[in-house]
Length: 213
Image (cartoon, rainbow, N blue to C red; front, side, top):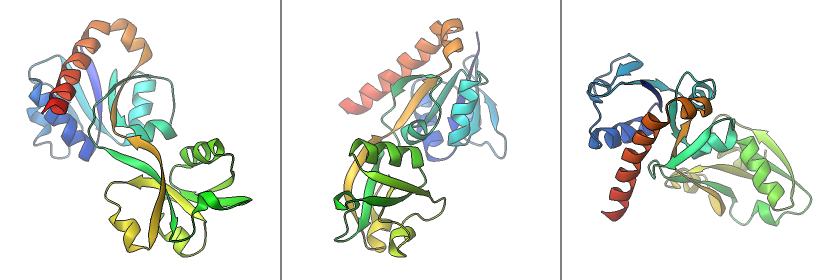
């Protein structure tokens, strides 16, 4: 049976395609894709399509994609009706809690205001600390919110930390380590288990090879 694989556009897409290519998959059409969004594998009975991170979960949950590759940050904030099968160990970053220097939001008593693009993640983290929290959802530059006094701190994704430093913010805790994950539609796993497990096995081999080298 053929497989449909949803790849998250951008950096994760490029890293995933490199892994698939190293496994012997025919991903050539993804190298010079132009504006196309759907691509056949030239060696295997597989169809790839490119989607935004949040949509990757939607396509997998509804069975349009049998398999998806998406960041753990998106999974933590989004739906849960799928199997999370494999950590690809690519696209590594982390959820951090940050605030102005000398103003650790974790040390504040009473009501705390936190700015984040990821309200569910922020709520879960601060509730686990027993804190009274209000999350203000910010879609733009979340680093601006504590500087202007809108919030006491932020929960955001950090790769290098350069933007935080430039805005006078300090990292006070890591809420979660993040990387790309392979997710699978539950019905597809029953119907196409052999094909899906062959894919998982190939990718797992690449993860182990990368760790050892």
